[in-house]
Amino acid sequence: MFDQVVFAGGGGRCTWQIGFWESIAGAINLSPKVVTAVSAGGLMSSLVLMGKTEEAREHFWSAFEANPKNAYWGNLFGKEPVFPQYGIYRNAMLELFRDGLEALQRGAELRIAVVHPPKGLSGGLAFGVGAMAYYADKHFMRSLHPKIALRLGFKQQFYRARDCSTIEELVDLILCSSCTPPFTPRLKLRGKTALDGGVVDNIPVAGLDDGKGRVLVLLTRRYEQYPDRFTQRKGNQTWTYVQPSKPPFISVWDYTSPELAQKTYELGCADGQEFLQKHANEREIFNEQFQ
Image: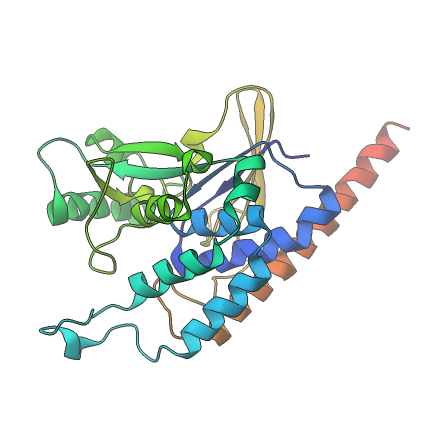
């Protein structure tokens, strides 16, 4: 039914995507040829394509249970990190992706977005300018697909997961796509400064193939000006956007609450079931009209 799928970023909110995918994939034979993803959406898309979502929930929920704080300010002048998210994120991927690279390479072509800043901007300044551009678009202009960072010279580049020859390479790619100082260190990919791929567009549609077909876009935040499900024509393609029916319970960088993560996952499951019901009703109406 859908030739391509887009996984938006959103940190912990992306847990919603797993619940939604698990609810609909078998019912509609969801088997896309191309998947584009950014930031934590890169993690979620990798997990669903590897068939490791259940294992991932168990791992992350346990890690969250063992982590009481999202910031350890007592470490500010010590050797241990203030923010535990990067270590938890990286260690989880190294564990969960084990024995999963082959499945990822033979399935859908997964393309993960990383942003590279314009010349003259680097490090914290690059991220600061990019973040301000992104938030201006999302929170003031309320844009579905931001444009400001792109006009400032930030470039969103897509890298194929199947080109990664080792698990470590894939983990580094997703970390670069999620690079958000101070929660993560400053990172480089192939010698170039890397920033969270969502700085240019948190809904990475630029990595899609052209041509006729249907695209499913999995959001992770509420856009109140849009319904829970809406469709737009883009050239020869039909893009179906789906967003959480209510704000996800867990926030982007909350690594302390398995309960909120589970509730966000369950919201995705419920929204997936609602999607299937509406889809079935639409098919019945279509069939009645053309019998």
